[in-house]
Image 1: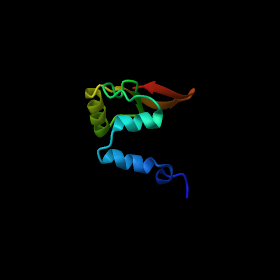
Image 2: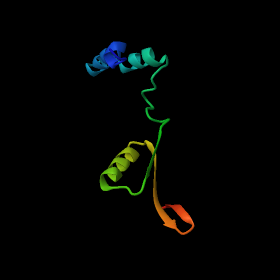
Image 3: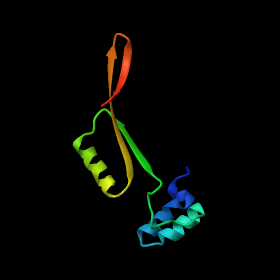
Length: 90
């Protein structure tokens, strides 16, 4: 069989965590370093680039911002002129 989760032991580790296993210990075993549970997601930055932000995406962005997760949203529009295509930040 391929290198699926069950073949690597990943599936059993996930089941153990789902059944109340120790996340800190599992993280240390997998990555060889301590899990900083008091500051999760502090090193992440999410960037969304889109033509527009629909209502459900805006709710998602608001939720993550309230959770102190760094996020930037950039909206662009593309238009063409006789000189060629242009990208405009909306």
